[in-house]
Image 1 (cartoon, helix red, strand yellow):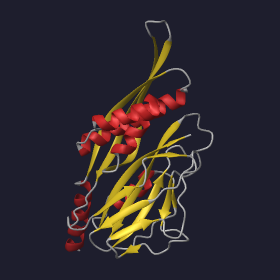
Image 2: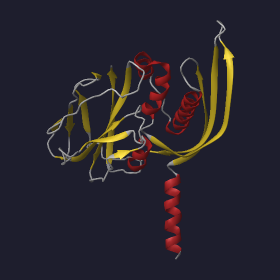
Image 3: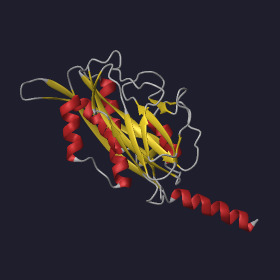
Image 4: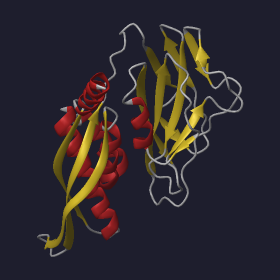
Length: 264
């Protein structure tokens, strides 16, 4: 009985050692066609980003911010920052503890709104400690696409592994934003033994611009997972956080992500 109790305590302590409860505040200023709900949603995303930065110790590079601002504008830049920086940790048990909304005027008299959100969140840090010899590299045929263009992917591996590719769709308004691209019904075998792999093999990967999006360009992401074991992933996930809950506690895999832009 003492041994069992000690084991349970040890496991709990081990899990807590990779998690931290933090508070963070995000503020977003908006005007024009940005709604009140959208403005506060982006403030929450900024708060989540700051919570991750407190635990992970990483920030967004100036190159990422510059590209984001140039391609997608300020509003979506704020949204994309979270995707670009959130792969090393996952936020759980998030609670909004304070919310304030105010209005101010610019020098030209135009009024703008400010939404400030403070959260308390549990941030779990990635525990991957794989042998560095287990690795892979990924290249896309393009990083700027038009609606209807074809996507091809080149993968270099230094060891046999199970490869899974997810497409992350931040602008999808259905009940999911993550779709498994590979393996699929036409490409079922994802255990890769060769050192080089070119996808698609038996399928066609076509890029499309989301419907009902009043923008000239948007960013999407491909998330690549290489694993020693065959993980039974779902075909769809509602949010990227749902995938992170699986891989962040698994030290038998490695991951990469690639960002690409779609123009109308």
